[in-house]
Length: 114
Ligand SMILES: [Zn+2]
Ligand SMILES: [Zn+2]
Image (cartoon, rainbow, N blue to C red; front, top):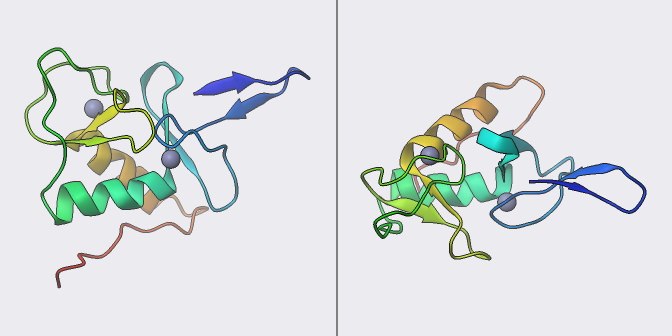
């Protein structure tokens, strides 16, 4: 999310953990200014892609990043805001964006089971 502070500066905060942008917390933008940070993506990618675990959305719940409703499969749920979820496709896509960015040292986490 984009938050304007008292001095009018725009702050970038992860919608999932609500922490602000920093050098070791890079952000990937979804639709309508939603953001997911690299640290959340490390957890989300491991859970969703490697461990094949996650949260099964209730009918009508919307992925915070693509704003699509009722996507199939398990979603990653914010540890802070239970109604903030990301679909598998967005987790994979966002991880891919960060992974490929030459200016960002973040890489997709390795499979913990291998
Ligand atoms: Zn985060
Ligand atoms: Zn999505």
